Image (cartoon, rainbow, N blue to C red; front, side, top):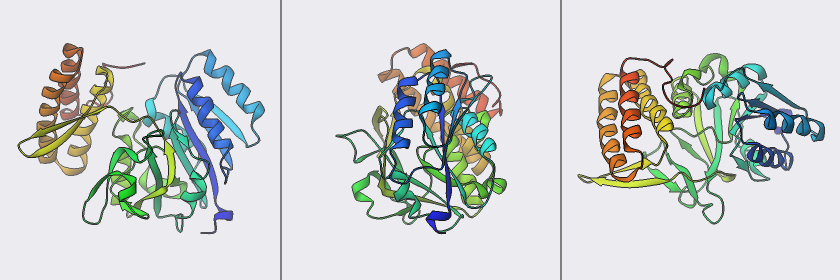
Length: 309
């Protein structure tokens, strides 16, 4: 598709982080190929965020709008809410990111070079801020050979991958009527993986553009070696741990069956042991692990015993 014919709405989800929100909007304004419009989903933030949004609306040279939710919907709910507001139409893309993302000036322009049809979604290299800007925030897995990459310099050119995070993911809105937006009930963690799984089932390919850069804080990961296998556990507060555990098991069960969910549950036990060794607040971490496993196995996705309201 001709890039000049493509319309792009930058969709940013925010919650009570006005400084970061200002930085990501500045980065959107500075794009070499600017988005055609910007939509901010304010996840029921306080008045400081509301005041900033009014200031940004007045200063923006790009059509700028903001919608405030009645409660915090999390990243998954915020993206779903925003995609519904943008609507589904041919030749229109939605460029999704959290408020702690910061696309480089040529990020969108580079992504659009891969937008040759509307049967693919395209993401940038989501990397740490300099000097860690070669390290992926989350490892990517190539479809061919199932090789996993943690450094973008090892990827070479554009790469078809299994999944990408909602960090600068460029999505044609025309495919959302058959794939559907992210599942709001996942709240945070794994909603992007689950969305990519549904894309692939619908015949949509996921492409990484390694030369497109989006900066994001690197997660704090601990490497665990056990019986010749390597696992990584992210350092998280208990409320985020709950969603990580619950959604990881639920996605495996929902898309790959009960056997897969049991295997993931076994991995979760190893992660729990590691958390008991490395993490503070062990009692809260244990509660998060146990509740997450329980709610995943019994499909209690409307439950939110941890985290913000």
